[in-house]
Length: 95
Image: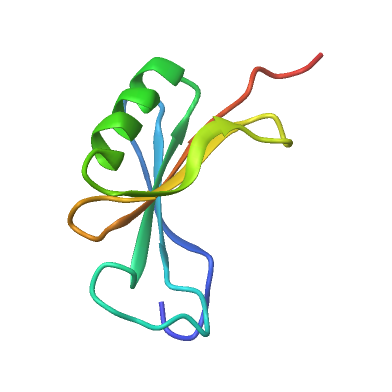
């Protein structure tokens, strides 16, 4: 993870969800909690929305979980422990 930015770690769960991790972008102050972000993504809106509800409860929402112009539903929050999360729910593929 030295000197590079972007998604660095990836874990695929048995249910098909992908969990990715990234370090803080260059120029951002590093402090406990913002030195990495966790990003669950997949296409099960119900399950991922449930994760979002529990992660954002008692935390701080930076981007509300809602449909974005690229077609996916996306949100960013910091949980009550100071960990940053980005949740992405894949939109229905367009034919």
